[in-house]
Image (cartoon, rainbow, N blue to C red; front, side):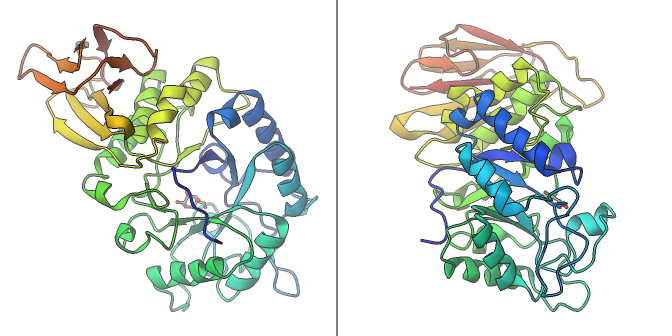
Length: 381
Ligand code: GLA
């Protein structure tokens, strides 16, 4: 009971990609309002995760973590109430060593903000405050004579969650260094598979490619996590955002929006909330898709869905990163067939029983033309 079920990949919003440690309670509450007003909540984005950077620089004299008094002055229990009142759930960040990643990499001021030696107290505080989701992030936790091993550190917190009176989604992050897919299913609900994403198409595509072979480990309740979304952040075009989100849906990835949703434009909101896209990601069969073909100018991805359907993605990759504007790629569609013919090489055909629906528009179509760094996405069946 204390480890959440997560029958489909968790969806929500996380503060890190857009704000790093520039966070405060009013801003987080305004995010909660916007998750509701933009339709993100109703589309399925229900976890609002406050990442690293919420802590006061020191623990209390009793050893407890405290929220930064200037930025989170009303307390995390207050924040949890605000989030719950809006029909959302609250996620929060901890790290198992002596320091958090922001202390190590972002010069975040503080001492002893890691949970080493305080694991039980920190989790108990989260439970009392009403936190629903724990992101537990390695951050070189073996430094400073902790004696921690990757797996040992995550198992220790996992046991505390298993014994906790409150249910938690348990999200672990050691960047795929120790093949967590082999040991984390059953212990955690999601585990990072790769280093941190950045808002560039090469990062997105590189991370998607690195999921190769991991598809067999993911299942309902236990998900490979290729990291949070950069959709809507400067650095990605709208087509690249579509490709990023589409790939994540094909991968049955957790969908944690990571942009400033208060200022996002309508097109970005429409990409994030597209119901057919979300339905692929959240398909109840929970089977992760994979890249089935790599050609000179495109990749083909396939995901098996429930009800005998499949999702097919054709990613225009471009010859080289330095030459993003190549000839458009024509993807032809017939009954039960997606066909890519770029004129210079083999024709690739993906056949499956049933009608083809173009996912972004929801319509039947006979041809989709995409540029490099865009994704044509279909369901068949
Ligand atoms: C690591 C994680 C990120 C984020 C930061 C916070 O880099 O991989 O997702 O949580 O730490 O400091």
